[in-house]
Length: 291
Image (cartoon, rainbow, N blue to C red; front, side, top):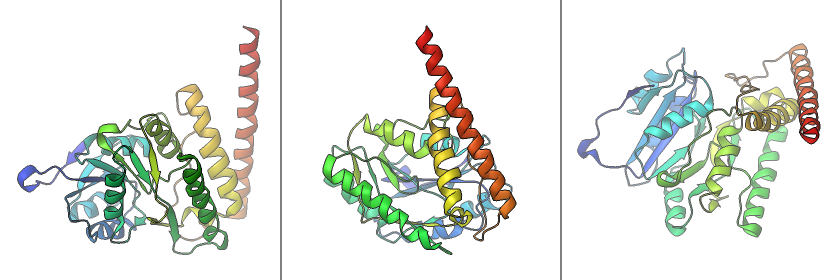
């Protein structure tokens, strides 16, 4: 990795290190960094942009806002988040994304929650979608994060955090599993954090992220994004210890760019992957039973 770290007067240790993985994010990154610059938090904040081998002006834009720029050549969101987290100097490491913005009190509320719960290791919050939001996209995050909040209230446990909105204490952070791909930066991190202590969920502190991936449609997001990459890929990669299924394709447009033929092809491919994975797992279980 290559690092470009601006000089910090006095060498003060920041309260927060905000880690932002970025691959060809010139369209969104400036709004994200401008939003961070507008936070009302009075303490010191370090912003780390991990350029994950971009071919556009991502690094240039990050430098123009005074961010620490790190170049991670190995593509993958877990590689990028781990790279930034390893270099973070703040007491609290905050994970978010380059296509995400925040209201001015976002960091202050994270700080207040962690101070109110000194035994906690992390705090997460919901995300809301912005831009050309499909009709169904206003419903499902409310249902998802409402369920997370309810479960947290009833059990004290959190079953999901979004990587656009989670902060953890640096001295308790377990690091990211770089063998993971899609979903590993959320599901695996949460699993590791909860081994170390309580995770708080603050449903009143959202982030605002672009709805570009949602433009592929509800069926695509349920079948391909969730079932294939967040469920199947996560468990296959975890069981095998290597990235059997890679990360979902990145979308850099806000319009519905896939034709019907391309979408059908993706669903067929995803369905085939699911069938093969089930066969592999059942075969493996059978062979284990013979030993």
